[in-house]
Image (tube, rainbow, N blue to C red; front, side, top):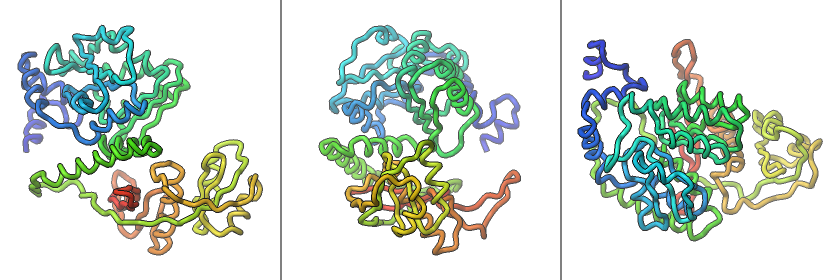
Amino acid sequence: IIQNWLNNQGIYPERGCKEEYSFYAYKCYPIDEHRRQYFQKICSGKKPSIGYKLIPLLARKGMLDSVWTTNLDDLVVTACIGNGIQAIEITLDSVQRLNNRPQNRHELPVIKLHGDFKYGDLKNTEEELLNQDKTFRERLIEYVQDKHLIVLGYSGRDTSLMDTLKEAYSKQGGGILYWCGYGDNINSDIAELIQIATKNGRRAFYIPTDGFDSTLRKITQIVVEDDNNLKKELLELHQTSNINDTITPFDLKCERVNKLLKSNIFRISFPDEVFVFDVSISDKPWKFVDERTLERNDISAVPYNKQIWAFGRLDIIKDIFKDVMNSDIQRKPLANIKIYNTAVSRLLLTTICKILALQSNLKTDYKDKIWTENNSKSISGHIVYNAVLLSFDRISGEYYLSLNPD
């Protein structure tokens, strides 16, 4: 109702456009101090979610060098307190801390690109956002030249910041950009940034995710796989978060349903062994293996560390790969399966997709989706099917298959 009224006035920005945030921030609070007080009120007292709590763990492991954020809250800093990492806040009024400041391994610079509600200026309005601090801009461009950047929980609506990133990735460098968006919907600004980076010889990727907490949890599970102390700490964080969740009052008001509840999870066990053999594949091993096996129901295979891992009959495997084999086929135990490893996860998911599709007469992309052609819709000239997205999770040492609507 409110949005319809705003639309009918003809003077307000369209829903979802990049000017919404800055327009309403200024419209509601045209005085700077009032704006600061408003954001202070909504940010104060908030507790970090598990995604934030994993940041100091990743920093201690040496996986995080700094955090650059457009958020105004203190969640990153709060998460670091008492967890072995000293967060060094760098805001609009302390930019000089970025210049030639030595950093030890127990410190994590937290650069607040839009300011901090506790002190100094904020950047909320269109004019303020267009004038990104010069030092922040220069250091960010310099930073991503040789360091990898993972973007999480950011829509790319800040024109000044996006222009800075476009300038940064138009220069030569070895730093890779991993833009982790929510779902498969990539907006034009992000697509343009990735295109600019690729055109200038940089590596940049858009990665669809389930959100900030889920992504950081999965990253951390991979990072601490071989560190028993950090694995124990990660498990304790999961348990603490689960306890907090169970005591939170729950009130579901179904006034409008526009999303599906993702809750289908099933315990699963994997084969005890996988066939492994050395190969000589000169170029594009994934493409090579997929062309030979992806759409076949009698074999599943992936390239992994100059080898091929496969499920299937020995005679079929030998027949398909006899021209590239460099060793005998060995049986490798599938103990302590690393389900978050790209190759291992792909091998298992591909196999499950083939089994489910074959048994139930379903269609599959042979990677992580299955669907039926009996129920479809036509949207903007495209045929759309109801699909199920498959993924794995590990909880308390047990493996689970998650089936989510897609």
